Image (tube, rainbow, N blue to C red; front, top):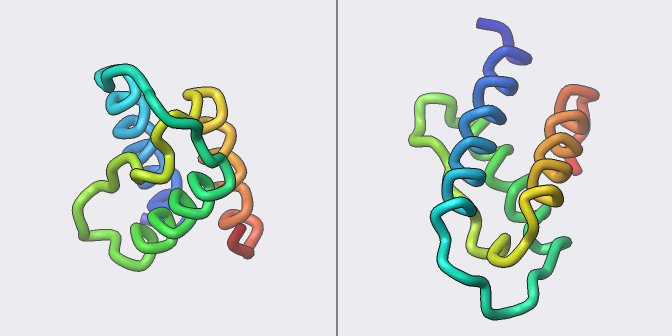
Length: 88
């Protein structure tokens, strides 16, 4: 499998985990910090790339309260950044 294939597979797994977590989460009480969320997602993605045999990631605690739309946008931005050869 190519590096891009691994990245795509990992992104799909992380996105699915995040979406499932959001769908099953109880109400959100505090205001989200989108910048901290994206940074945590980027860090988790980088770890997943360097440890492809490790367990799938889960929703970072910094993403509590961040909308699904923003999470999907962050995931796309992070993957695009890695595919273009740089990190966020």
